[in-house]
Length: 483
Image 1 (cartoon, helix red, strand yellow):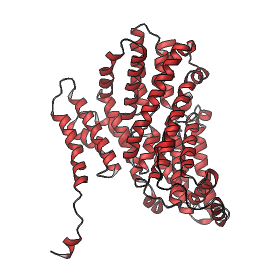
Image 2 (tube, one colour):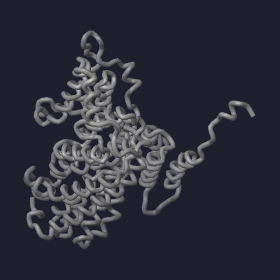
Image 3 (spheres, rainbow, N blue to C red):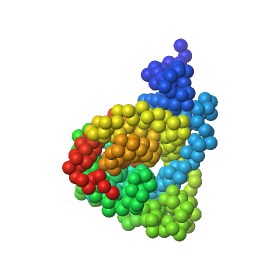
Image 4 (cartoon, helix red, strand yellow):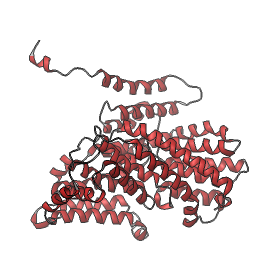
């Protein structure tokens, strides 16, 4: 036996099994005829299972799984490829890329270390307290801002702090995964509080105006109807986050005085740090303040605000030295993040284009014919399922019109059901496909198995809270059924 053969790594049979299981499950759905399911729906369900399997077991890099929609659609022709391909250059992909350029600039000049120290001083070194604090920050901001933007802004700060304390591989770190998930879940839990929380909420407003009232649905009406439901979701999710994660360390090494000393030892911010911080701040302000100027520059969405500031990183030369070079950026950026996010978006489009999402919805409709608590539960479960496998916007676009049509045909007031369904539709916790927050978190390399398993329980508690509180409001608060 040669020396090289002695040093050859042993075959990883478990990884091989997971590698083969994904495509095997896909082919089973493709080849085995199921009378109630068309060829396109069978292929879509098979693709969903394949991608979920590989994302959770990780036999290949997460970004590689993100390319499966393109390859499978091109080979098996079960969806229009022209509708799937644009997902890989969607605005949110541009937003993530540009935000990553800006935070990579922080790394080059040490601003990430400064921010990490400030975070440890401000929140404290207790890891449970850190998890809850970041969850609350994400939850509060997402009430007024789209959850993807909140996640893309806040998660890089958390990752910077984790790197400072020596946690580079988030997949292998309970603390790293917990902190990033806390931000992602916070953005989902607080998303239904106001109409500004994201596209699903604005879609619901449009459906209520067009299909039910024929009149403007006021933002103040939204807050009064949705606030009790949102509080219920936020409370149960917060309590679950408090007990769900068990970090490998209970306290970050070092006292507050130590971190204060470390921060002081960095000295004053350099011009390059100031420019890096200023560009990120300007991009964030432009993204969050878009309603103030959207009428004048309608195409200048948050993605392009971040992209413009990212381009400036390569142009500006404080004290004669480029703020950022492409050579540095390409070696530090998280390229897999963009393709994983794009893959989740593409999967959602496949499920919509092939009618798979509607097929799942139609399967559950007969169980809601009697109204009451059963109907509330069925439509809430349907929406929650749609949210996990497509995304919250697609889920609301599918289930809210079905909800309205179904209960109008039964001569029942659809509004209470719409309020409950929309709140549940914001509860994307399990997979990268479910919402912007989990997608951004997944791209940073957190443990997707942890997010899926613990996300299931977070979804269950949120579902129970929405159904119980929503049904009680419908019974005992007459205004809950009005607009």
